[in-house]
Amino acid sequence: MNQSLNLLKKLNIEKNSPLILGCSGGPDSMCLLHLLKSNNYRVICAHVNHNIRLESTKEYSFVKDYCERNNISFEGLELEKTPDKNESYYRQKRHEFYKQLAMEYNTSYILTAHHGDDLIETILMRLTRGSYLRGYGGFEAFYKENDFSYIKPLIYYTKKDIINYNTENKIPYVTDPSNNDETYTRNKYRHQMLPFLKSLSPEIHQKYLQFSESIIETENFIDSLLEKQIEDNFKENYILLDRFLTLDKYLQKREIEKILKKLYKNDVDKLQVFHIDSILYLLETEKNKSIDLPLGLKAIREYDKLIFVRETENKDYYLELQKEVLLPNGDKILKVDSSADTSNNTIFLNSHELHLPLYIRNRKEKDKINIKNSQGHKSIKSLFIDEKIPKSERATYPLLVDSENTILWVPGLRKSKFDNENKEKCDIILKYIKKGDKTNEN
Image (cartoon, rainbow, N blue to C red; front, side):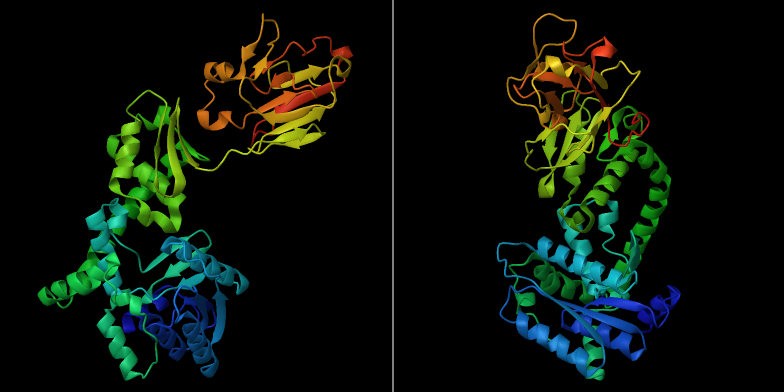
């Protein structure tokens, strides 16, 4: 296991630095636990009882007892029984637990026991299902994400190497019977494809590791070129298309891939090549359209933006006007004493002409406003269309109304006839501040 130890040395990890190790109790994680402990690393053994198999409780006790006997710090998490949840849910819970422990122990290092055979299986599955370039590289021995460093020291070794290590060192472990169930796709690769590949080349895992490293090395280089481009184009949850559409098609594809990876994080396996192709095809049309992506994400082409949003119910809101009102989308409505601004971002009202109190709410069907200096009423829906307000924003866009539900103001777009040009008669002055805009708050 010298290559695993050399990786830790190469990363300059000090022996007294806490290492959070995800340990299931199986042969792989018990091998890594023993390797770290026997080389005097400070290990925090993190075990999650998913409560989905009868053996789960026994495995929890097994890992805990082993740690107690060998003077290893143990941290356990027992989840409630949730049989309707999928693997993605449990993976997320594990990673949340590991990151929580890393913060508690003031460390950035999170280790898992993925090995060379796991890498082969992952690459084969993605080649079969389809992925983007980095996805075809499988996973890395080391990578950083935000404040955390993820390490897979056993990537250089096979399952057989691990079993031999456990046998030589008399390391106990538990076995998960579901690993033999070929109704799981990964197990078909494990039991059918891997033996065939190893019969052709016993060191096939080293070739797959070289393949993985080459792809990831290329990806990192391209990412370094794209980083500034994405920073300029990608704002919060949308891409500015004016600049994006001038890029070469390959760079467009790479930028979409990189943005989706950021959005999906640990669930990036849910993405396939056709998802990215569908987004690029969406951008070839001038019409406002959307496509559904995995896990409730939607890509929406709206005017000069490509917007990524999670599919959640738009919640109605009805807020009484205060000195300052923070809106659900992060925008603000402020009461001010005076203002020289006469744009649609500021309205001047006379309380004697209104039915108080005033409220801020989202749009309803058949809403209309009597726009200042115009004849008759205009529907809010038509106003949004004219002003090219994205569909994704229309349901929650703020409206100022009085207690009789008369629309007084569509902040930033139009003021009603109640906006008073005689400033001396105005005792309510309101300003609309978009999220992130602090230039006009005073």
